[in-house]
Length: 173
Image 1 (tube, one colour):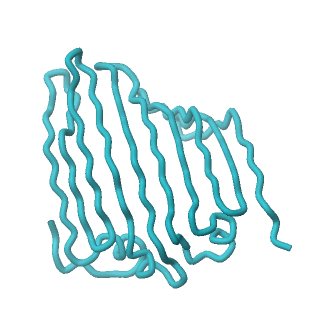
Image 2: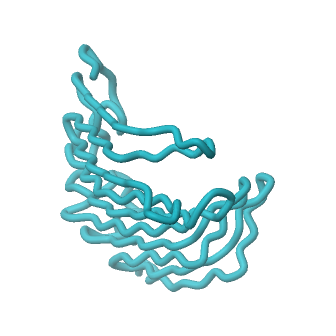
């Protein structure tokens, strides 16, 4: 935990003056880290996650985060966002399979054009995996008031390669 934090911007608004975090983890004999419990709080942040090891050596981790106090981050920003995620690994040397879903409520970023596209209740979902420094995005979908976009691709060796990218947005008239 900390105290006396100050500043401006997104991190200062979310963490506040007295952020705190705790976790319970175990280093496994094969070198992997099993994260059993994670909690973090700040003025505009609440994170709760848990994980463990299965009977045949797989790891899992899932959680939820809530971000609020966005009005303190930037002029024109407001509302909140929440996200859930899960990660599983079948065993040592196997890829991590990830999924995440995020939603805004009464959301505004403070950037006029972005807020017009996203609206007050945007949502984002993504699925993919990570292995040996390669991030494979099987699917990602962004839905907002005036935008709908989907994508898939790979990030490897610093290069982002989309295998699919589609979307539509409404033009302001």
